[in-house]
Image 1 (cartoon, helix red, strand yellow):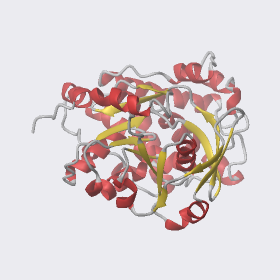
Image 2: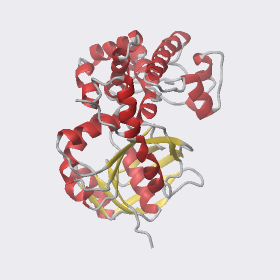
Image 3: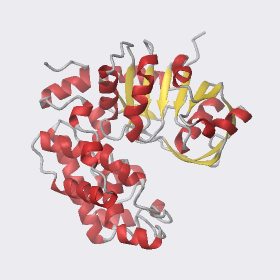
Length: 370
């Protein structure tokens, strides 16, 4: 009888609670880690999490094996470590568990944003982690979910097809095989350049937030973010950013989906231009804007998505004036140097690589020359 896979979920936020509860309901051995012990008090008291869901979706009480704030304890028995925290914390959590990993474990970032697996590999290497672990990243988070209480979560939707890739890509099949039983929705994402450069949040979130800054601050976000916030002029800015992203991807050998292609694939909507396509997406109606500019659409999506894409563009000769403008505006608005705090090429360990070296690295794990 094959050994049952043991999971550790890192992060007891909206997504982490949903994933831990869902895995537990499916009968898996699940440990939940959160660095703040008080966030786990109610979960420990109940021994698990209550999960609500859409009609026909997973629901019930998921009994956990453990809920802990001890990082060593959390990863000790895990076969798969599901990292469900903001991408801005990926490097920090990597530093925390680097000394406690063992051969054969898998680390999956949900999602990686842009360059998440590359950064995680660099962090572990820099800390001398000798364990032979596989790092993978999802292109987007598999759930639309919310925490509904200290020991409960709700899943609104499970995405039907989520690209996932390992670093190197030769390990992707192994990761998909392990995850197939609980998550058949994961599909081969080709490599981590594909999953990172098909990051649509990088295009939609920061620019749309910043170009509606006055309205967000004057109304505390009391308007429909995509419907009222995306005017024809705003959509034209999004189109420029999207062209830059697709061009950066092409420069490193990746055929990235355009925003229009993504909307058609994900929601089956079309239009003469991006403005019309967004207005035709009925699922966007009713979604309110962020209530503040201190929001993950800026403090996460700018440094962990826009900055690495823009830096790849600069490195490989692509004009990214639009992205650079949005990044600068974000720096001004939040008085933060996102260029310095962001996921730079050096932090991803690819600063001096040619395109062919970068491709060999993400596809085959071939170490670049010194």
